[in-house]
Image (cartoon, rainbow, N blue to C red):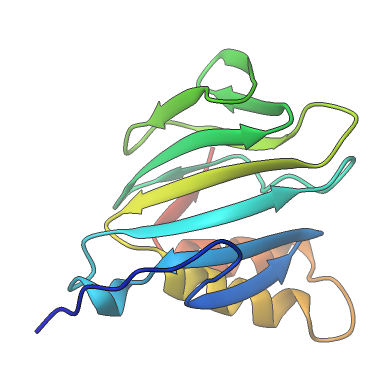
Length: 148
C-alpha cells in the first residue's frame, strides 16, 4: 500500500551525485509502484553533460527552478530559464547541461521511474575515478537508453 509522504525544504528520500551534479530524489519508484520518479538536480557551471541519448522506456520532463539550462532535444537547442518547462517524449534524442555562469537547479521527472539508474550512476561516479564513456554507455543501455 502506498504511503502519502510530505518532504520539507531541503529534504529528500535519497541523494546521489554524478558528473558534478547533485540529485535529491523527492519520489522513488518504490513509493508508487514505479509510476514516476522526481528529483531536484543541481547542474554546476562547466559540468559534464550526459552523453546524447534517447529513452526507449520512459518520458522525461524538466522544470527549471534557478539558473539557465541548455537542452539539446532532437535538432533543437533550447535555453531554458526559471519556470521554463520542457517535455522530452520517449524516443527523443537529448542531452542537457548548465547553460549559464551560475549553478542551475531543476526538477526532473521520469515516468516510469528511473531512480534505480541514478543509484547505479552514483556508484559508477563515486568509485575513485570517473567512468569511461563505454562504462557509462553500458549502464545507460541496461536502463533502456540508446546512443543518439
